[in-house]
Amino acid sequence: MSKPNIIILATGGTVAAKASDESTSTDYKAGVLSITSLLKAVPGLDDIAKLSTEQIANIDSSNMSDELWLKLAKRVNSLAKSPKVDGIVITHGTDTMEETAYFLNLVSHTNKAIVLTGAMRPASAISADGAKNLYNAVYLAADKQARNKGVMIAINDKIYAARDVSKTHTLNIDAFKAQNSGEIGYIIDGKVFFSHNSTKLHTVNSVFCVRGLKKLPKVDIVYSYANDGSKVAIDAFLKAGAKGIVVAASGAGSIHENSKKHLIKLLKAKKLVVVKSSRVGAGLVPLGKEDEEQGFISANDLNPQKARVLLMLALTKTKEGKEISKYFELY
Ligand code: SIN
Image 1 (cartoon, helix red, strand yellow):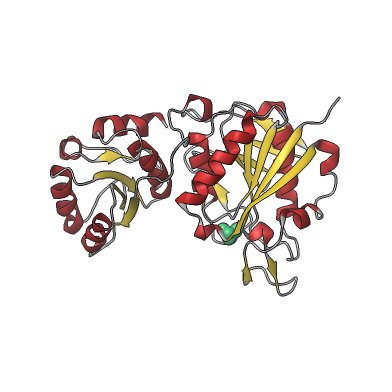
Image 2: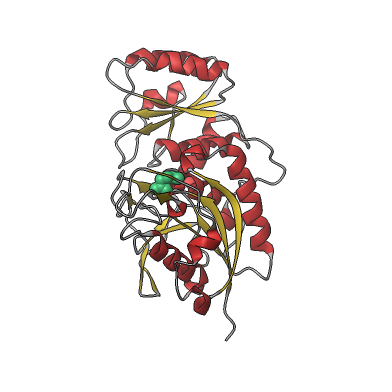
């Protein structure tokens, strides 16, 4: 039987990092090793798939940009159309991996497997996790069961749906969790096990598209906290061209009155679209009757950084609060 064709798109991250010695696992520069050199540390991949590679970028993922997202998404869409590509693996820093994965989940129009992976420890460290993660990601992308699942993250032997996963630990190799729904499967010794699917729309069923898109609408995030001073930030973002603001609200969506009053004024004047997410990290944000009347939109259970991704794409379609709200229910 012929082996599946898997392409690995490399973007950098700790998986491509080298520290000064083997015992150092936190002080290093991410995104320095090439994908070709990373593959040398992963034996057996040629037995699973016919591999090809492309170095799209080599960055610390905290420097991810809207421009690079658009470039990556366009490349993914073009590769996915090719009959010579059966699945796509993307190596990525873990810091913003969840955002890139969710962005691709919304704009990649394919049912072929798209799997992101990375590492919590640099490639040079004792017990580096990158090689195993890359091995698992290729196995997953090569497996027919992985089709129609939306974009996934394969890390620490687990499979997560892009929409639901987030990084929840600064250093631990078990850093990724889907707090509201759990992982959707496992990869054990080259065998893929799925337990359930993400229920939200993605990939071939998504209305969002990057074709012809040169820029994304500007959306920024403000954080709610005791004695909140984010009114200043909101005005600065607005002045810099923000079309939308995501509030990382406290609890189930409460915002300090200092900035809430200001946001209500801006909503009334139709200066901004405002989405309420939560800084808590799990659970959804329900909207009260008054919130709805004031024009706030709920991020549902998306965290602030993911709500920003969806709001940017929603704003490429409409400025209408009710329609945007619907997108937050469906995606
Ligand atoms: C990064 O996100 O590029 C650095 C951190 C990591 O990959 O774990």
